[in-house]
Length: 281
Image (cartoon, rainbow, N blue to C red; front, side, top):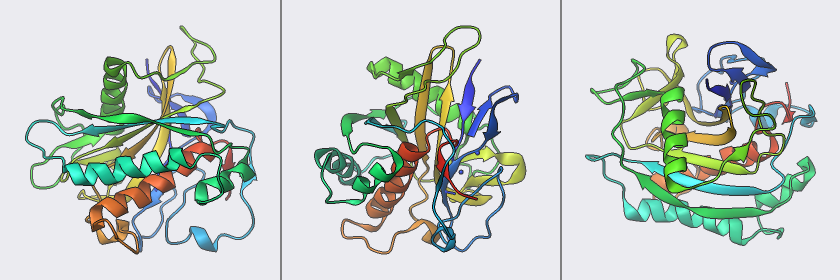
């Protein structure tokens, strides 16, 4: 049995895959399409356009943070989908640069110390996953392209990570009554090809910006199975959607928008991996 913890670009938190609550609240955190009215996904939700206007400080709700982090990037591009090497190079280069600057005060990651997070990052590399997509699990795809559910993405993430020998965090309690790790340190970032949509709630129209139910650009979440916990970020190819584009693009529009959103989810995962650490109303 799988259990999930959620977070959106906007973002749900820690809930069991069979629908039974495994924590006081559940959800996702991430980045919402700019200009779109925010919907309350769970007890809290945030939007890229309004977050700066929320008064006061973030509140520590006592959940774990990622004091140090090791990042893997997964490019799930099956046969028939082309991954631009220069685009991948920009994204990998960004993750490598973040790691190389560990311990410095030269970029925004240094402020995570305010949230009991050490700027101690390792980029452990990336890999291309060419496994074919499963049959669409949601109905919001466009032009006959696949639509993937969050569970479908996670299933592939965990299988691929294991095939690569990439470690995940060991549960605090394993076996028939598993409990997620109390000290998560690994982050997995999954990038999907152009045209492939995904949803974490197809029935309510809460899907990626490149779908017929455009809501989010990306999000971070966390799932655990009987033995391991996976903190991960879902990165659908929403970079061509104007609501998901950053203000500047020195390396090319889609690559820089992907980096901009990656940075958002990365820092959120550090400060609030299970959605019960640092957040506000």
